[in-house]
Amino acid sequence: MWLLLVLLQAALLPAQPCEAPGEAAAVRGLSARLLGLAGDPARDPDPSVYLALRLAGDHDLRGEERYLARLRDAFQRRYGRSLQAADQLHGHPQWDAAATEQNASAEAEWPETGRLALYLLGLRATCPPPDPGPQRSLVTWLKYYLEEDWAGSRRHGHPLTSYYQYSLGVLALCVHRKRVREEVIRRLLAAEHHGRFGHAGGSAVDTQAVAALAFACLERERLVGARLAAELRAAARGVRRRMVEAQGPDGFFGNVYSTPWAMQVFIATNTCQTQPAYGRAMAALLENLDAFTTAATMAQALPALHGRSYLDIASMRCQEEPDTLMPVSAEPPPEMLGDMTVRLVVECPQQWCPQRRLYDRPVSAPAGSSLLDVLRAATTQGPPNFTFVTQDTPQGPFLSRVLGLEARQQQRRYWQLLTAPDTSLQMGVADYRPEDGETLILRLSEW
Ligand code: B12
Picture 1 (cartoon, rainbow, N blue to C red):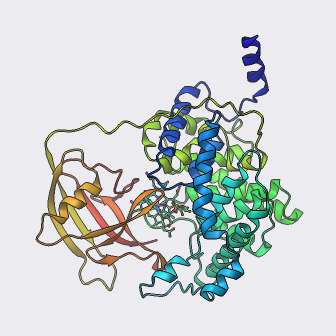
Picture 2 (picture 1 turned 135 degrees about the vertical axis):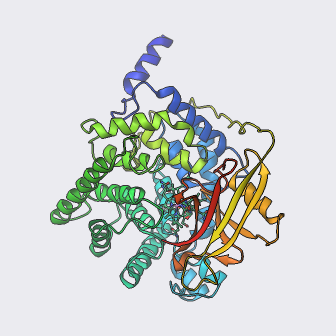
Picture 3 (picture 1 turned 90 degrees about the vertical axis):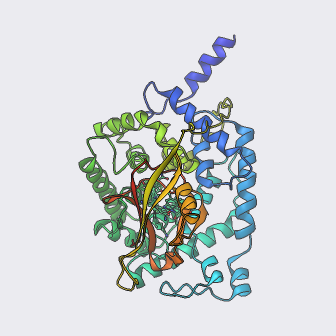
């Protein structure tokens, strides 16, 4: 009888056609590690983590519920109020992208298109689907942020946030079956067409992929007229073609972290089985699962590894969710003996910089230290004095200020992390572990 039930359940559960063949255990292991990280109350809740848990093959339904409650608490407090009430309270927010003065309240009012979009996607992924009433003000906020980004893109040639967040905004509204103004969609189409998604030191693949998911959703949900639908279909096809052309010999589209996003495009457009590049990317990803050590990177990789895309959120099957996933805690990195010395260089190549090289000296730190540990060690090893500031983000600590120089998002500047002679790092300060003798460069760059 028991065997019959198991067989019946297996027969009812549709195999995901884009799933990793024969690798269920490894993928399940990664889901279990993410669940372990999600259970840590010291970490801020992140909607991408919730989405990855919801789009997995098996679940810890009680754990997911607790995580959703934490997310609701964080977001509802911020967006529960209506937009009109917020406007009356603060006056119309001043979002002048050229503002140079440090202004904490303006910073707080900067559009949060991507965060809110991810949260709304998360809400759509709950089982049973939530009452739409309380979501209305969230949708209104997202529409408002998207309009601000659109207006910013007309004024400055790019959205106030980024095309990545703009695409997430369009995608989330589409998954909620909310219409978006044609001009807003056309802006994204034009940006894709003119190759405006890349930035210095970063590849365009992540952004191209999210935009293509938004295009695929708008077409699938029939939220646009026939002519625009045909243009969106052609654009998604173009993105897929360029990804296949640009696939590296290592099997990745862009790098290991952008590859799962690119794979979601093949999943969402039902081309995972016909496109050999998809199978190569999946194989490369499975070979490199240990690259996904942070909750944020795991959360972005898991949907594709499970053969799912964010478009599947629009049609969750609530009855068929095996409640069998158990959390696994991550192992700490192995301890290494002795010390290492790395050279730390700070560069400011802009015209207004007092000089190009602001700092250049060896720093010693325990072997196996992260770059963040090296920066901390540098602050104790002057002269010259070294100072830095990081900001917590869902991706980990983001280096925002070095030697008193702040890289402000509004000015599209950031502290780029490089290893000599000129290779941009694929990890943040907390995750990158330099080797003895390596030269690390912190460069004030534009994006
Ligand atoms: C746009 C973007 C940027 C912009 C962000 C500015 C902005 N206002 O949008 C800029 C150009 C500044 C940037 C910088 C970096 N980025 Co970046 N970035 C992205 C991208 C394409 C979208 C992020 C986003 O908007 N998410 C949506 C919002 C809602 O989520 P969020 O978490 O709140 O986003 C904020 C933070 O993530 C933060 N951020 C952006 N990148 C990074 C990277 C790290 C390590 C951290 C801690 C924070 C951080 O800025 C976002 C906007 O405020 C992602 C792609 C992806 N797949 O996630 C890569 C991505 C997150 N970045 C990545 C990397 C490696 C970097 C850099 C370390 C590159 C470098 N060598 O310098 C630096 C960070 C250095 C530092 N100072 O600490 C990797 C991270 C991989 C990993 N192992 O974690 C990703 C996944 C790209 C990739 N495929 O490799 N990035």
